[in-house]
Length: 383
View 1 (spheres, rainbow, N blue to C red):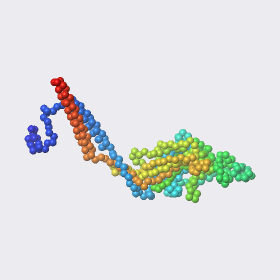
View 2: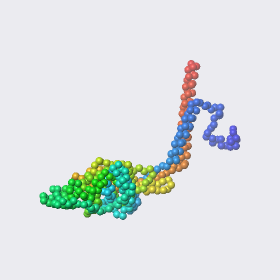
View 3: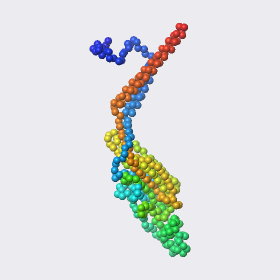
View 4: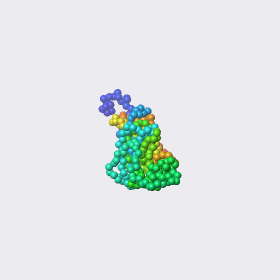
């Protein structure tokens, strides 16, 4: 009896951990091996549990979006057009009713690119949203004595200016090819296409839109409204003259939040021909990210479906890039959480106790099996 037993003899009756005498303990090589393996397993699992405890857990929750529709959502984008000159690029933002959104805050720029994608100009130019104006032709007009109407009017009729040829073709419902019309050789848009041939354009920046369904598009031509329609004046040029092949370096809604990948970033779309309408149908989901330090970031994530259509030749549409977005009525909340210390300690105890118990059972099984085999061998020798 040791000193503690002499001091508190009444507690001996509650001892659940009876101790065998040292003389009756048997140590075996198999028991030592099991102990070493159990210790390695306990250390490995304890390290894994510690690493898991130190990492933050991100919990996802779903709510009904109760924010006001008057909220402005920033659309951030960086898009490179491979063969569409900056002089022809316009950008428009419209709501679901095809009306231009008003009082839009934006900060958008464009940079001229050469055919290899390198900057031609170092200073970016400001791009105005919803700039509805038609560019007048300022080039010198070739005026023949009695210009041909190219079959659009009866023989003997004269079309002495480019506009008269256009009007004659419009009466017939024909599409005029300005490049083959003598009166239009000095047309402003033809000159722009010639002067900036094989140029591209990088369009990047931010535009704040209302939190309602709508679209923004980057397309050639001069935009204007007629009745309730939004149209672009291509100045009688064929849609195939405008190659809107592009690469999307970045497109996002709202502010950036940690470790978020955006589905269109790094994508490239090139049909190797002009007159293609690239459409992106985007479903935007309001998202909040609540960090462990109680800081909340409000942003948006989205899914996208792409569609391409070749316009011209009787097919309606406009060459360009169109992003049609719609906001979901649901909101996603991501919340960073740290596991409680008590749970970490309980898991550590469970690891140590569980591995120790299993190791004891394995050692007992090995020892018992070894004794049975030894006894049989001794009986065989005596027999």
